[in-house]
Amino acid sequence: MTTDAAISVPAWLERLAQLAVRQGVHLSTLQQKDGRDLELVFATATLFFPADRLLDERGANAVLKHFLSTAGAMLDTDHVELRRWLVDTGFVRRSDFGSDYRRGALPAWLEQAAPALDPLQLAETVQQARDARDAQREAKRQAWLARQIEVTEQPAQAIDADETFMRLALDQAHNAWALAEVPVGAVVVKDGEVIATGFNQPIGNSDPTAHAEIQAMRAAAELLGNYRLSHCTVYVTLEPCAMCAGAMQHARIRRLVFGASDPKTGACGSIVDLFAEPKLNHHTTVRGGVLGEESGQLLSKFFSERRELKRAGSLPADEDDDAAR
Ligand SMILES: [Zn+2]
Image 1 (cartoon, rainbow, N blue to C red):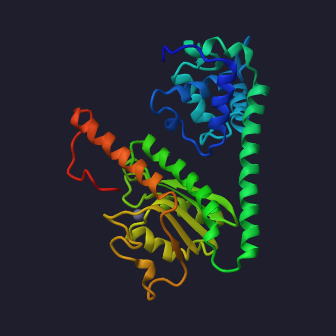
Image 2: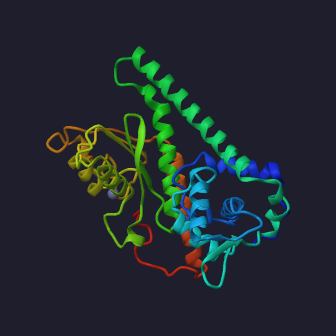
Image 3: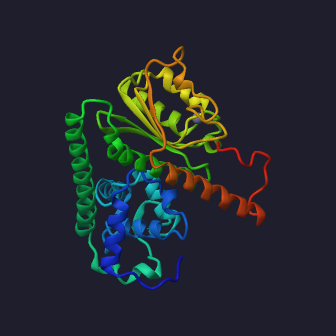
């Protein structure tokens, strides 16, 4: 628990709105740094519980589902996981028999503002922030489409749309970091919509193939019920390795957009260029360097933090220290 100064009602709503424009946010991502974001979101969830009475498990589930479809819409979790976290952290109290749920105590910095907030207002704040984000995205898309009509050739103007999707891939990279995995994220886009997301998770999944772009393509293929992703674009924050480039070719990915170059294992120009090999690739066009600096900085920050932890003895040293993934 933090001992910071109390948050005001407007500051609470403002931070919630900032979080609301993201999507697919893991609870562990919110727990990063000082954990204030997690506390704020959990406190928001508890305000959906009635102040004055107990709920049985069904009632608690209904409350949490309602929260996740409104004020908690940015979260990537379900009511069961969320309930477990809320109980574990004391934001929701469960009776000794495990059958009744009620609001728990809030951290001191949230206690004062909480009584002035209600579910309707919290849900509206999130909805407005997400609507504004969608409107902004749609305006960008329309502007991009308008330019497409003007310029019928392959557009350098796709920059805006590519950056928008790369930001979502960066969000996924943060999910990886929160789980202590090398921060690389990816999204798969079809017809201007994100249909799947993924982040690097080989350690947690005990799976050497669990690179961000594989995770995202796997989810996309499952969603579409098709192992060919012919009309899809993959956005990934780091230049794909040979395995991922190969998987993209098998999936017939139409377009690949990546962020930072990977001088160690990059297979799109850095070490080899598998997409430039006409015997291998007939399908995928490639664009690199979109938000490359930001994507690269995220990785450098991660590795420098990790070196710091190793120096301090909080992490075991391992021989594969600099491997990107
Ligand atoms: Zn890879």
